[in-house]
Image (cartoon, rainbow, N blue to C red; front, side, top):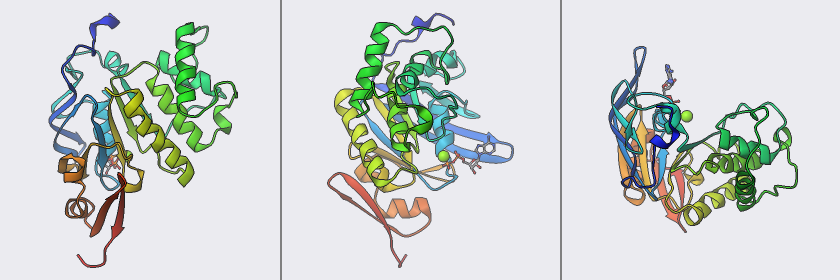
Length: 274
Ligand code: ADP
Ligand code: MG
C-alpha cells in the first residue's frame, strides 16, 4: 500500500468518519465504551466532556493514530486495520495544544511542514512554488503576515494556534480535528481563533471538523453538531441545539449547569439547585 493515489476522498460518499460501537481498553480501564459517531461532509462537530471523559482518545481514533479494541472506525470509508494508517493520516488535519516543535522555524516553514507531514523541516526538501503559494494564502487567511518572519519560539499562543491550523490545512485534508486548540488562550486570541474557524465554513465548505473542548465559550458559532461524553460513554450526540441542553450537559458533567446560546455562541453557568 505504498501508492499514495490509492486513497481518494473527493468522490467518496458524504460520510467522512464512521465510528461504530468502538470500545477502547488500556490495561483494566475502559476508556471508550461502545461509542458511535458519524461525521459527514460540511459538518462541524463539538466534542465535549469533563477531563478524562475520553475526548482525546476518541480523537486519536478519528486521526487514525490508534485502533479501537473492539468495534470499527472508518476514515474516508477506509477501515482502520485494513489500510495503511500513514496514508489515511494525510487526509486528516490534526491540531492539538501540545506541539513539540523545538527549532526556531518561521511561520511559513511551520505551515510548509504540513506538506511533508513532519514536525521538523525535512533536510534538502524544497517546496514547489504551488506549495509556497498555498502556505502564504493560508497564513494570510488566518491574519498572519507570511513576510513577517515570525519564529515559533517567540510566537504568542494565539499565533501558534492559527499557524498550526494553517499547517493542518496544507495537504487539503477532508477532515480537521482540533483537540483543545483554544485552551490557554487569552480572550482576544481565543476570539481570533474562533473567527478563523467560522471563516473555514466559507473557505473550506466541504471540510468536516471535530473540535474538542470542555469550555462552552470556546465553541465556534459555526458548530452544527455535538457529542457529550462522560466516562467514555456517549451522553448525547446529534444536532448541536438538540444535544447542548442544560439537562444533557448537567448529566455529562455530573453537576447542574445552565446552557444558553446567544448570537450563535454558547455560555455555561453553574446553578445552585440540582
Ligand atoms: P480527555 O481528553 O477527555 O480528558 P483522555 O482521552 O485523554 O480524556 O483520557 C481518558 C481516560 O483514559 C483518562 O482517565 C486517562 O487517564 C486514561 N488514558 C488515556 N490514555 C491512556 C493510556 N494509554 N493508558 C491508560 N490510560 C489512559
Ligand atoms: Mg484531552
